[in-house]
Image 1: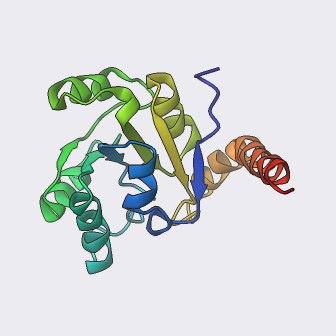
Image 2: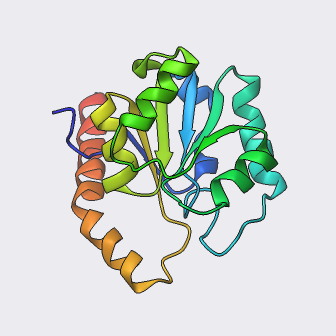
Length: 173
């Protein structure tokens, strides 16, 4: 099922995802969530490590692009600081905005990926669009409502881990 919201790849942090890994999957365009993925909700600062991570993708021929549901200025702040394109108010998991950007960029969905911290927005959006999905651990769970929402995502995170274990067992002789 393409709409099954289990990520293709799950890691602790964006920094655990390398340009080489995504290049191996054929990715040319990387949509990046902002809130709780590249920065906690309370922090608008772009740190050198984030800039270096973004630059690593550019060097490998992968275009970073911010795709955020945030309705405020955060997507613009990060996009400007990182010199990347962006869309705020993207309404993920709806794929309408995503497909528009893919068309504008001339990139087929099979050559794009989304990296984000939420199953029901980021991963589901990627899956509905037929794209590669990367799920990261949220940077902060201080807000009790966010913590509850992430709790509801736990079954899909567990399914991912079980699939990984099964895959590893099949590979061992």
